[in-house]
Length: 286
Image (tube, rainbow, N blue to C red; front, top):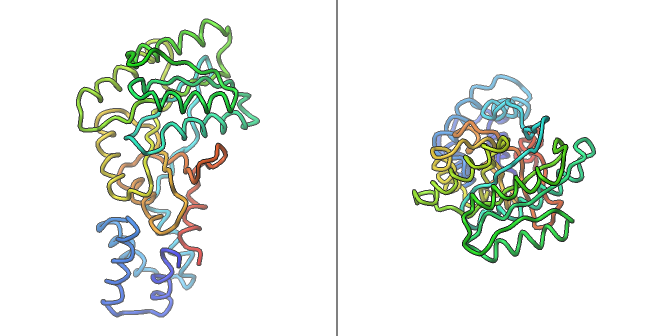
């Protein structure tokens, strides 16, 4: 059953039973919409006078989503850099590879991709990114075990800039450690990476990867990251099922940061640019 099927049915039948709407609210809560947002959606929906209930609810839901541009920023004058952040297990390294594949397959960009392994304290993360880079034929840059992540980021930028005269179609994807957002040392390390890159070339995007299956915990993580660094876009991973699909609506409404991608699987092609219309359609379909 789609997330809003019961609400649509209640509105079509002009239900006035408060118990019915309490149960609908509970259903929305289980789908990670949160208490405040669930109640707002129900109250706005109950005020609908339009006979086409589905169309009206679509409009209500769209009103909680941002209307800002969701396209990735690009540096037209030189190297474009994207820094990927998030907690351990959210899928940052796999997303880095998917993003690289997305850029490569874009007919508009004619992109040359470089991957910087700045999660230097986990050999497995470096190895995983290296494997993806080899599979996709990407330029891979890493440092010694336990090297300063900012130093690796610096080397990556300088490596690209020194090898290529015109870097306007070159993209550097920086995979960072799964920082525990409550640890000030690790946050300071992330800030150092961003400062280091910005001295050489603009950081065009800081993309926060959130495990969509963690629900409201993912929202809490995102809030803490937002407090520490200037996150420019969100990426929701592990969005294979619809049971908890409301988290995208809740996160964007709360943080006012645009969701730029949704990741649904483990393949390099399992990535799609976020579309409000497509997302809402999935919430409404039977």
